[in-house]
Image 1 (cartoon, rainbow, N blue to C red):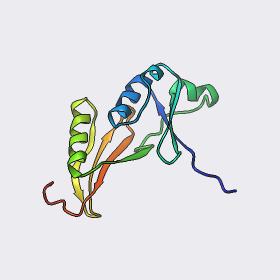
Image 2 (cartoon, rainbow, N blue to C red):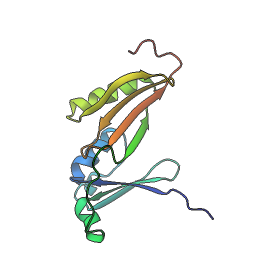
Image 3 (cartoon, rainbow, N blue to C red):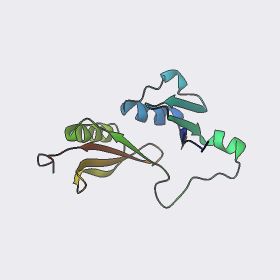
Image 4 (cartoon, rainbow, N blue to C red):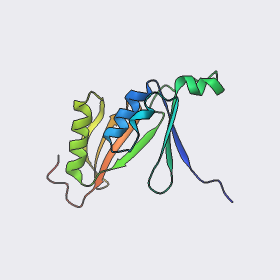
Length: 136
């Protein structure tokens, strides 16, 4: 049997802050996990998303350092339609998160935006659309 992608891990400086960001994107993460050193949730299709604090990672890899020079992780969230991309982006920015790229109509036929999570990871928001003329 070939290996199967099962888990995507995110290293976080502040677990509660990071989980609050991902809850705002619709992930069902119990608030009781905010103080845990490791948290994971099952995603549709069976893939898991996990968060580990820097201290947790350094407990088994003492030489771990945060990557520099760009985004270390990229996640993309599918929105229902182009207006949901705009609204979700605006809501996250209003909550204090940094916009990396404001919503735009991508040449490949999607409405797209990128926001940074609390640890600076790129989180894309996108929607498929045949008619993007109302968003610009």
